[in-house]
Image (tube, rainbow, N blue to C red; front, side):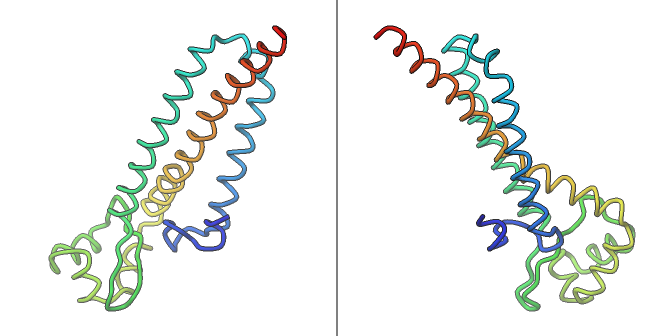
Length: 168
């Protein structure tokens, strides 16, 4: 919900409602898979379920770190214009020239203006689309790994409860 209302850690070029919908749909799909595979998962040992839970919770931390690094490296803030610009991973010749001539991305924004930078970015729609796709995937991954990790731990806890109920 914070994503939808506050646009936290999301580049302005990516609609936050779309990203929120993708996160929700992926999470619900994962929960449905856990529900459908419940009988197969119950056959797994408690140690294996714990190990999988820990692995996916660890992957959550790694993917969150990866997203933060990607976000900070590609989402450039300029205080003079009070704007952020999502830079593509692969820059065209015009954009590369502006950045090299100015010395940095922020200097290029100051020297040429944000609209000239955005126009140069829009001249390579495929590179910009791939960058947005990478940002979306790396944004969704931490949530997915967390759902999967806690899903395995929930199956383990439910198995333990069911086992204790059969003893008493």
